[in-house]
Amino acid sequence: MEKGSAAKGGARAELAAAVARMLAERVAGFRALESCERLSGGASQETYRVVIETVEGPRKLAMRRAPGGQKYSFSGAGPGLPTEAKLLSTARAAGVPEPAILHVFEERDGLGDGFLMEWLEGETLGARITRAPELDAVRPQLARQCGEVLARIHAIDVRAAGLTDELQQRTPEQLVHESWDLYEAYNTPQPMIDFAARWLLEHLPPVLPPRLVHGDFRNGNLMISNERGIVAVLDWELAHLGDPIRDLGWLCTNSWRFGRSELPVGGFGTIDELLAGYASVSGSKIDPDHVKFWIVFGSFWWAVGTLSMAQFYRLGADKSVERPTIGRRTSECQVDCVNLIIPGAVEEPKSEANESTLDMPRATEMLTAVRDFLRNDVMSGTTGRTNFHARVASNALDIVLRELELGPAHRAREQERLAHILGHAGDLETLRWELVRRLRDGSMPLDRRGLAEHLRQTVVTQVAIDQPQYSGYRTALGKD
Image (cartoon, rainbow, N blue to C red; front, top):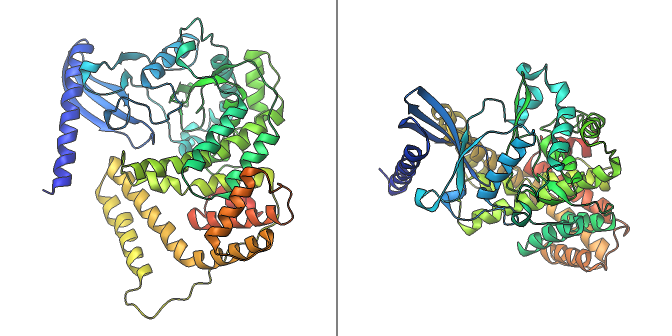
């Protein structure tokens, strides 16, 4: 056995032993730990299905903990997992569908930050929620139900719940600056991110009294059943105090419609249905333009968030193949910003690559062979997280293949457009950094002639490399 495999096996055994010790102390009637399987969902925190044997028979539980069992929350601005457990219990008491919290980890458990909760049955995969035939009956009700649930969350009295000192307060302006500053720290020039930040600061919504904001209320963080609709609202790691309409806008962000761009609320409903459900519980009528600001912010924020996943990989805390691949999704979010605030005509990217006869096999053939091995052989012979990562790895190689095909002409044309906008020649990296700096210091007006067209074409071509099946790409090309 290779050292890496032995180390992973040892880590899994240590985790299982620690979980078993914790369960023996905390779960009445516990006899044995049958399995502790990490689930594929959850890019920021670890989620496990825990199966135990009790005096009354088999029982499933859910466990959530910080990456690697650390004592911090990766989100940085989030409340941390112990407070997340408290939020789940508070929301449950307020009528929000949630699992019961069974135990919040303590130092002596040796599991880091995290908690144990009851296992609930339901669908959590966003793509299946938008399309699965078994959810056909409940799907038309989900947008209104989301509005009702959000109104209950926003009505929670955080002071009475003892959460005031555990949650940070953020205004819309602060949130824009925080994400913009975080992106700047990554030292990568992405002009559309800077353009979107400027646009947001010029279109700030009216200030509302701060309320509890879930922060990640979206399709993919909801558990759905055909009998009950929303079974649970998951992943409170980004909860804070602020503008509650952020939650409504985030739910409508295109990244979480899973290809159903014609249904803006999670890919399953309309904004009118969402706002009607919200008003039925809160009594408040929401301005759609207020929601649009937060939809734009959602795409901007997740454009930075995806880069954060790549940065987390670079720092070495989690070397999963999932992290850098998610980083390439920033172009999806950027094209959504394009479609929202600078829509217009673009040229569909075409391959201009010539196959070289110098090498046999060519680099593209070797990449294709590895991709097909992962997709056809590894995936067919594995299950669970390994199967999921094999799929992610094969998709990553598809990106590299498209980069080789479309990248050279794309970069050359970007360089030409930048030279025209900036008024002088230069290499691509220097020109792109100059545009970014001028957007940041305000010396480049957002309505500069040719700027919107340049950003639109650059981002659309990049998303053609990163994910040509993304719905925002089709929207940009006028094919939806």
